[in-house]
Image 1: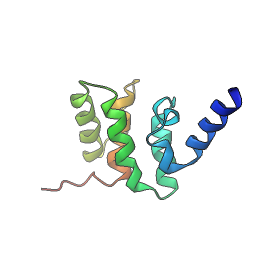
Image 2: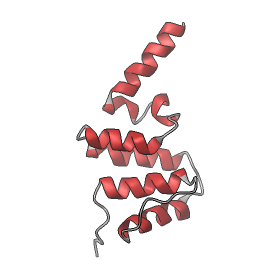
Image 3: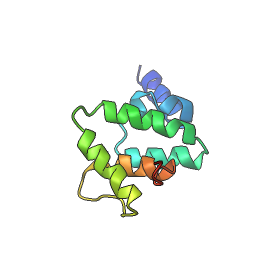
Length: 103
């Protein structure tokens, strides 16, 4: 049983297509590192999917998310202070080049 759980965890965690919708992705201690890993693998297409799933697991977080994106668009450094959600939003915006105003 342990082998099945552990091996499936590593299988999910090592595959970009799997990790964005997996328990490994949900319970990572560093979601920003996961976003950066996806980018390093050239999987920009999966960054939004993971970010949306992450944000969906944090209801009522719209203002914090918007603050992270706004900081990225303003050219500010990644927010610090333990607000992981704002950090994920900032990183998503930077990694997917949403820092330019689309208007």
